[in-house]
Amino acid sequence: MIKSDFIKRLAKRHADLGHADVKLAVNLLFAEMTALLAAGKRIEIRGFGVFSKRVRASRTIRNPRTGADLRVEQSIIIHFKPGAELRDRVMKRARSRVGILSIRQIAGGVDDGGWVERHVLPGEASEVV
Image (cartoon, rainbow, N blue to C red; front, side, top):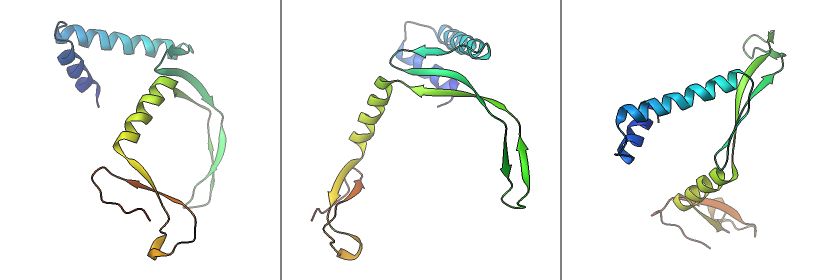
């Protein structure tokens, strides 16, 4: 989802706020978060996650095509660690969309006595042996 779609969705869900107000709020939020991260601050939103700035050390890599060594300079990355509540909600939704079945039948109908997990989409026929 891109930012403009996000703004439209919020404006639709909160009809009491105008589209311009929602757009302003989202833009202010992102601008403030950007400024804080640029200043090296950590942003923690309880239940959602933590944004932080990390330094990636300089390193030597190898070009797979030529085999030549290349030096990559130090860089700064934005790291996001999802909070427990966000992880739990995403995983709960993922589990409800994809069922996990254990089957004894291995490729070609050979059963070695072990268990294999098979991911089955809702509505897909499956036989458990």
